[in-house]
Amino acid sequence: MTPISRRRFLAVTAATAAAAVGGPLVAACSDDGSDGDATSGGGSAAAATDPTVPIATESAPTSATTPASDTSAAAEEPAVALPGDPFTLGVASGDPSSGAVVLWTRLAPDPLRGGGMPDLDLDVTWEVSSSDDFADVAASGTTTARVAHGHSVHVKVDLDPGWWWYRFRVGEHTSPAGRTRTAPVPEEATTQVRLASASCQNYQDGFYTAHADIAAQQLDLVVFLGDYIYEGRGVDVVGDNFTVRTHGTEEPTTLEQYRDRYALYKSDPELQAAHASCPWVLTWDDHEVENNYAGAVPQDPADAAIFADRRRAAYQAWWEHQPVDLPPPGDEFRIHRTVRWGDLVELVVLDGRQYRSDQACGDPGLSLEPPCPETFDEARTMLGDEQEAWLLDSIAGRSTQWQAIAQQTIFGDVTLGGAVLNYDQWDGYPVERNRIVEALDPAADTVVLTGDIHFAGAGIIRQGGRGTGAAVASELVATSISSGGLVDPAVTEVVKAIPDIVDVELEHRGWILHTVTPDRWTAEYRMVDSVKVPDAPMFVHATYVIESGSNTVTRA
Ligand code: FE
Ligand code: CA
Image (tube, rainbow, N blue to C red; front, side):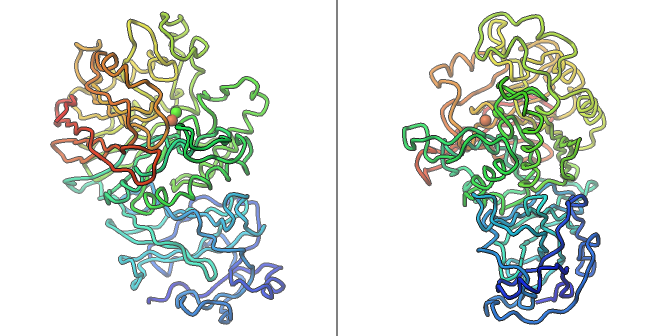
C-alpha cells in the first residue's frame, strides 16, 4: 500500500510506563480540547498530521503485540493499552461540499459505561481511498481524539468530487470502512441526486429495519431531521406491544449520561450501516435534549434550575456523536447551515428548537379550543430573529433548481376548524410562518422536508389562504424510523380532509427516498411492515411527484 504519513506520535509522560502494559496505541498529551474543532485534513498524505499538536518523536519499533494480519499499522510505539476494540460505534461522514467531507468516529471500547477510554488524548490515523481494499490511499493523516470531546474525532478532508472509502486506525485496531462522497461542484449541471429524509428513531419503540433499507439503497445523502435519540428513562418491561428493547438507564441530564445514550443508539448495527453507506446531513429536534423544550424553557418546570446546564450537555453530546462540519459548542452553537448539491439542490437546514419562543397558550397538547391571543403575537418565533433573517436571505439568494428546507415540525396550516391541534408545530407560530411563506417565490421550486410527527404525509403550501392561494412549496413529511405513532390511524380520513393535505399514512414507520432531477422531484415513501420484529419486510406505500414549476405534489 502507499505509505501514509511518517510514523510520528506525541509523547506523553506515561508512555514509557504504559508501554509495559502492551496494547500498541499512540497517545497525545491531554489538554482542555480548546482547539479541537473539525480538523482540516488536507488532500494529500503530505498534508496529513494535525499541525496544532506538537510532534515529539519519530520512528517506532514494531510492537510484539501487533497482529500479523495488520500489515499497515504494524509500527506503532506501545503507549496505552485499550480494554478492547475502540470502534464499537462505527464510522460516519457528513456535511459534504464539492471539495471536502467530514469523517467521524468515537473511540469507545466500553461504550455504554462512559466509553472506557483512558484519561488521555490519543492520536487516531485516518485514511481515504478510492477502493475498499485501501490499496491506494488518496489522503491520510492523524487527528487527536480528545478527552474533552469524549474521544470523538471530526476530520474535515479535502477531496475531489466523487465517491471515497475511509477508515480509522488506532494502535492495532482498525475501524470498519465507510463509504462517502463529496458533492458535485456548484457550477456543474447535475442531473440527479438520490437522498433520504428520516427522523425519530426511538430505540425502545422499534428495530431499525428502515436504516438497513437506507443502507441498501446506496444513496448519495441522508438528511436526518431530528429525534436521533430519545431522552426517556428505560422501560422496565420489554415486549409489551409498545417496546422491543430498553434504554436501560435513567433520563439523561449530564454530559456523561447523554454520551451513554448516544452510544446505546450508535451501537445498533443497522444504524451504523446507514451511516457507513453515505454522508449524512443532520439537524436536531427536541428529544436530543428533552421533549418539547423551547429555547431556554424546559418542558418540565421542575427542570428549570438545571436546564441551562442540561441543554449545554446535550448539545455537546450531539456534536460529539454526529459527523457535522461545525466547531464544538461554546457559548454559541449555531447549527443552521446550507449544503449544496451542484446546481440541482440546496438544503437549507434549520434549527427549530434552540431559539424558539415557548409554546403558546401553555402548550395544551391536543386542543380544539380557539387559539389564545398569544399565538398571534408577532414577536413569537420558532427560528429566532437571526436565523429567520438568514433563512429569508437564503430564499432570496437561491441559485439551484430546487431549494429544500430541511426542518422539524409540520410547516403547513393543519388547523382544524380554527383550532391549533398542536402548539409545538408551525401552527403555533403562524405570524413567523406567514413571513416565510410570503418570501417564497411561486416561480421557484421549493420543497419542505419535515419529520417529528411520526406519520407520513404530503401537502401543498400556499400564499394568501389555504386551499385557494398561489402554491409556493410542497411539504413532504417523513414518518418515524421507529418511534411509535402519535395519531390514531382511525382518523386518517379526517386528517386527509384538511385542505392542501394531499395524503397521509398514519400507521407505519419508514422513510422517504427522494430522487431529484432538474425537471421532477420524486418521493418514494418506503415503510416497514412492523418495527416490533427484526428484519420485517419493507414496502412502498406510495410515490409522490412534484413537477418543476408546479409547487404541487401529487400522488403518482
Ligand atoms: Fe419524534
Ligand atoms: Ca420531536
